[in-house]
Image (tube, rainbow, N blue to C red; front, side, top):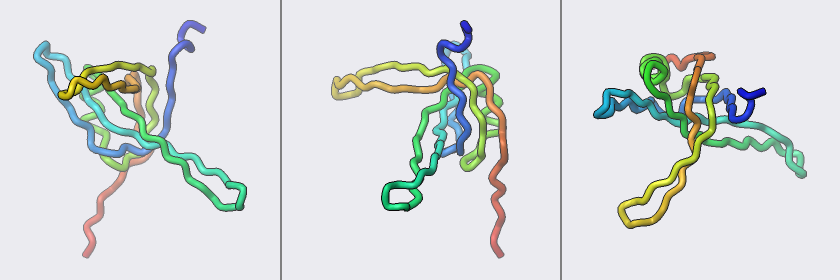
Length: 117
């Protein structure tokens, strides 16, 4: 049960092409957003879609894989852990960020862009 303490599994759609950076120490990091959606019927009998946006971060070989295979619109599965961090912005305000550090990911389907004639 040790591995169940901080585990996140999501299936959703990539919201933007990943941003890949190589840090001064040589490590690579990729960041992108992932949208997950759930539907339910409200009291009035109307279908409501609730979409949540998640920040995904991948490091090293996983980051390189993300850059190669993830594109906006791809449906993917992500396995990772939840992390929180904070920083001070340019105005000195403390900002808090919740992210998912991806350990593994899998493309479920990819968006194929078709040129219209």
